[in-house]
Image (cartoon, rainbow, N blue to C red):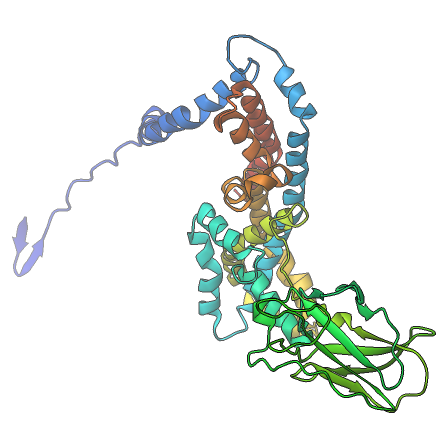
Length: 448
């Protein structure tokens, strides 16, 4: 450092050379060092089992005999496996499209409501629960008894608004004087004329359908221009005479009574019995009539849909899976929706486009890459669905709702010990994955 007067001159530091970049060999070594643990566990837990399963599929169930393609031939001859393949086709056709559509719908709608965060949480929460636990929840909800199954209980509650339960759902005639059946109504065999009295005795009545405050059954007096009668519980504690109204026998109120012409069977009049069981038809023309208890009296309440039966079990499974996966599709789609430039949407609206046109021509095309991701992910998911089926489907319905993954487990590990056949099923299922894996890889390459 030199000094001249008040000025100071400082020498510049020596220039150091930039270190050379690491060689390509060094780069690969560092990369492999980071990847080595993942490659090791991937090989142990994925690659080796896959190769071993493929080899095992060519051997007998005990593993001591090389049987070539016999396991694969048996796979396509087995009726239960064919049912599983058909069910998997239904899953692939319905669930991915349904989940994608629900996710798109929820994502678009939640942009327009003030309570969107709460709605998103409610829809996404099922995804945080294991599929087996979800199956247990839906197994309870699908119970046919409306007192236990939440879905059928809701249907019963709605149905009760529009239809009424009959007063007597299980009653039967106490004598042969009444003919017919509860499904079509009970009719008094003997015709009745003006001034007659009709006795309609019933038995086999549920205790819960008896009057809360029972009244003694009373035989009404005859009227000259009409027909009277009584409907009662024809049962007397300690014994009695069937067909006769006796002390301690209860009248049945609210029963629909119909009067029909004996000539043509047409209904002339209709009434409802009083609390003591009595009823009357007045102002009748001369002639023969038949008195009947209308079938409305015996109409039973809704017993619930058999969701876990052969006819509805597969749709029931699809609904449960949609409930779980809708949250995933909504979150992914909402993220893609947030990335769409708002000025593009506003420009479309400014040009006169309706909301539907903006959605169809701008929003959906912009979201197409995201929707494809959701669609392919769901296809892969439904091809290996297992725990939801096991936890919801009763053992007696397993064959009608089974899928390929369940059959692979059943044949190999549920006591059948058909390991060669199970390996063939597993390999067949892996082959089904290949087209979707290739599609995913090509999509990643295009994006990168």
